[in-house]
Amino acid sequence: MDKREKVELILEQMRLCLAKQDYIRTQIISKKINTKFFDDDGTSDLKLKYYRLMMEVDQHEGSYLATCKHYRAVLNTSSIMSDPTERQAAAQAVVLYLILATHDNEQVDLTHRVLQDKVLEEIPMYKKLLKLFTTPELIKWSGLCELYEKQLKATPVFSGDEQAEKRWNDLKSRVVEHNIRVMARYYTRVRLTRAAELLDLSPAETEERLSQMVVNKSVRAKTDRPSGVVHFEQAKDPGDVLNEWASDLSQLMKLVNKTTHLINKEECVHKLQPAHA
Image (cartoon, rainbow, N blue to C red; front, top):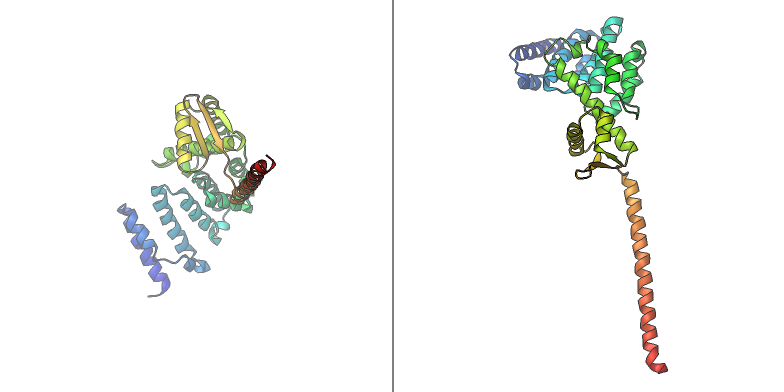
């Protein structure tokens, strides 16, 4: 049995497991396939089948970043790149799942790489949408809906299955999280009522979202509930922390030296007093 037949057999096993909704077994079986096998141009049909099966698994798990990567792999397939309709549909999915992914270093890095992709020039609306999440400015949810809701809800990402509504709610969550990060960048403190106004949320919802982001270490903040004020703290660069510590230590040693000198001086003066007496 050659490699192609083996991969076809594994893909069929994955398909059958998905038909039984056995997602864990599907993931285990998928690890038997080395994706480098798909580098050969003659395997594009198997490559597309593999990544579409993996999309189904990760969409069920809610792994948006993994799903985005699968769509990128599909987009980089010659048969997809040669078809403008398929190419643009895949690029749209890449952008949308990337926006839905939780903000972290990997997501930020992938966002900047995707923005440099020339395919996005063919879908300017989606490129503009993605840029909103890289710009340190507040995104008004009502304004975003006015501009993009109709087009977004026509895509397979936000329509067509039971998870579509959840994804739409997750998109709103990503907007709120982006806005909180922007607030943390520009504010040292802000009233909870004002933060709620900026986020289009109630004060209770604002406090809950803020608490979640603090727990996830996305922002550094403390809420003074009696006064209703949120205090933001800027994350410090490790180098700056070390320099600050070194500076504080230097100041401490100067104080110790000065204090020692003054003590010695007082002792000398005290010893000389009886002699003069």
